[in-house]
Image (tube, rainbow over all chains, first blue to last red; front, side):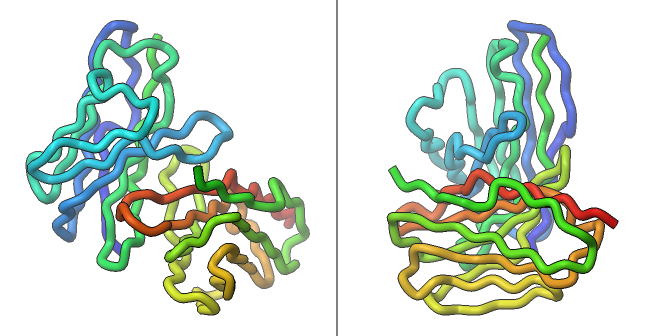
Length: 114
Length: 112
């Protein structure tokens, strides 16, 4: 399967700061990447679809001004959590779509906002 | 919206036993995916199913795409301790490529 990396793997920040998470597809070009959020002991919820060269598509209830997504190249999508608050603490995972619509997950980023 | 009902929620089994879990939906899906997630890690794709009735194996894992396209099961044979983790089913409906719907997961514990 495809290899997807994320950086950083873990971040702790103060309330009110912004945090950038990078998602890279290492061995293929991904015109579409996806960002999920997972709270403890819960399933994964799609936040947004990141489209290379165009605006991201956000799911209902996800604030686009708070979760900024940039997909500047075919191998990199970034998620910036702006003015983070403790309720934004979660596990953020990106995926890249495969040739047959399967999705390959990155290792995830654990965000803790103090 | 579309929802997946995954069961059981959790399983406690003895090493060597077979395991079965399933997902059902009131909606039709075009693709079913099964993932395993270890603590603190991203989910890893185990099996992808693309056709109704399709039966696919990956080592000790076997999964099937239901004929009605509204269900799928995953079987693990002769479980071993490293099978421990949370297993998620995910369905992809029509339309948007990214619209994966996840089940709530099945937590598997294996006693040596």
